[in-house]
Image 1 (cartoon, rainbow, N blue to C red):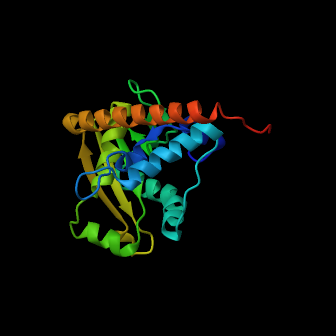
Image 2 (cartoon, rainbow, N blue to C red):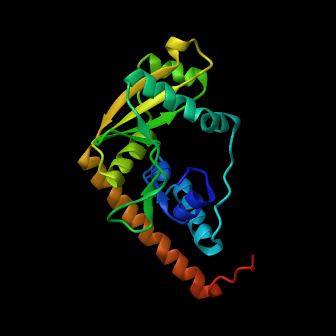
Length: 211
């Protein structure tokens, strides 16, 4: 299953994914329900009602990340002397309607998560800047789904001189963090189901146009 293919899109429709785990756990500064969380829930409800992927804005920086991901993966393989096995969407083994799309598996225990940020962000990582919490949550939830013990987080920028392009940090499995994320996902999915039941009770089952 190639990421971005129709098969991959269909496999994750209406499901919580690791890449959006920060939306599930998002809160306001006062600790209340975040609009980001509400919007993600609305996206999943939309996908379940329509059977189509919710629309998302794609910036130039985001598109560049997608376009250079394969190059980042190749640079990692060369640097570490390993083979990365690409993955599609994997369902969570214990939570229905949740899963992850790892950028790749490394050996029997590891994985890779490649990011291709703008140059100033990459330089901040080179200088010791911390991995954003949303990415940490994404990798921990990936490990919850896959059973892996670690993920190598890679920042890659091909606009810089070659010896500055790749930055790697290993993130180890944190079972306490994983348990917190899984609990949050279960609550989020329960709320999503209840809101969907409320909508269908009010407006009836969705009627889709024939293809």
